[in-house]
Amino acid sequence: MASADSIAQTDVVQQTLPTTPTFDILPLPRAGHGVLGRMYAEQRQQMVYQQVMARGISDPRVLNAMLTVPRHRFVPTHQVNRAYRDEPLPISCGQTISQPYIVAFMTDAASIPSNGRVLEVGTGSGYQTAILATLAAEVYSIEILAPLAQQAEHTLRQLGYQNIFLKCSNGYEGWAEHATYDAIVVTAAPTRIPKALVEQLATGGKLVVPVGHSSQTILVITRHLTGLSTEYTIPVRFVPMVGDNH
Image (cartoon, rainbow, N blue to C red):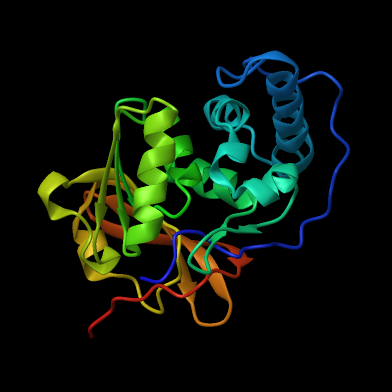
């Protein structure tokens, strides 16, 4: 696995949003204080309304997570002013933090229960990890690049997350010790679906993974009592997932 985050940027037409949301959301995030904190909160609100809701994401839990997690804490200092824009951003090790809509889309597709256990393959900046941790009881996250894993751990610890468990390892192998998982979210693109990840998916659970070569499609694989089903969703462009020895 090569990356933590995608370079995904989908061509989706912007839509005009209603001035008043139609669901119960948190008015302000928990992180940040004073004028600066309020400014970031307003930027997150605009991000959610203009980039996420406009493209069809409506689950209040997902929207609240996007409103709550301070995305600017997960980007390099020189990129902070671009943190809430509708684009992926470069981080360290030649990797990126995904476009906000892609983070919301994959989180929504995973259908994470509040008492769920989630596996993330590709910790990267830790932003997607934090979003997942806002929804799930436990998040187990794997990153193959040690500097990214260390930086993400530092950021997540500073923000006070206590239900996230990280390790530096090959994502193709999953994390069998804590399986099975109610959702598995993969943030880099394999050319084939890793067998170990499918095996570690709980009944009723969903594996959300971009699959392909230079361009990919996000697949949502659901384990049923009678087998697996696969839904083909949106086209994306993620960095390749490395670590496949087959």
